[in-house]
Length: 476
Image (cartoon, rainbow, N blue to C red):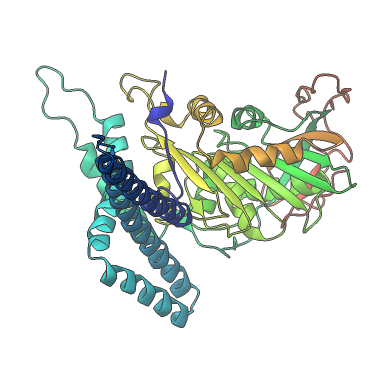
């Protein structure tokens, strides 16, 4: 059983803790150091007064002085760390500005970074070491996961470390693994048909573990929860599934390539947008997103699409990290030994998303040879265990996630819709396709205790089939 000590929670690839938190800690330590100095001075004065009366008294002034020195040394170390993280953030922001064509902003950001480095020569060395550790973290995890055991009479095993270095280098050269803010999917939209398989009532999730449990499996691909808030407004929570080994599915392997390599409107993206619209969401509505594996890819691109207001993005084993902007709380769960998560190549060096966003990572127990098989580190059950570790964590960055659950729990009504999705043959006009026969009947989501259950749909609900081209849907 993994322990919380195995979990690494960071604000970004290089950035472990946001700079504001560190600088606030520096200020407190400096103030505490000054208080220790005042205490030492008061104790020395008390010693002189008492000794003047002929009483021998040795107060712990030396201990107070040492405490003050320790506070100042720690403050200095934290100051260097805060400066190092700020340089990483400035350099990363400069790269984003360059990509956006804003050369003046990029130059200003780099100049600020150079000023910090010039003021403290230790910052450059510290940043170099942190970047090296960050870039090697995934390679080390993959090496430990996939290096075969050395058996008697066999030659040296395959050099997995070299292969991991080669693969991650190619990802960096190709410019994949991270997706910049403002990126939109292009290309023609793949025609898909969505089928509403179940309808029911539920309640808001109250943990990341519950989020994992709501990610569809089997024939279902998308779950959409519609929250009616006390003021009558609506919010939504979307859960997108991982890849399906069926070429008829919208979540097939070609969809992975469309999204990851080509940044094109994949069938899984189209099906998700159609399902969200079918559940009643209008452009500009509040839509929270969660996704596993390819579903994480889909959720990331929905967040970047701009159709909806996305305050929360949660991904499990996502092969990319998206710069979703400062209005979206980004929570990414990764396994360092997960080959799918490794496609993100560590993600962004600096943090992305709103204040409080974070990346949580760990190595899973065992290896491909002794654990749960070739992709055991990518299985949803493994991410469920990681989610449980975060649920029990006292890290203050989990507070923002818990606040989101609390806000959703205020809803007066929560309806859940579960969808299947299938590709349509290219030669068929999706606007003229008849209803899909033999839709996949699935039980409706489990209701919350005391909440009346809406009967699940058998077969197709509404107008039987929602057909999507370019994100539209006509299911009732």
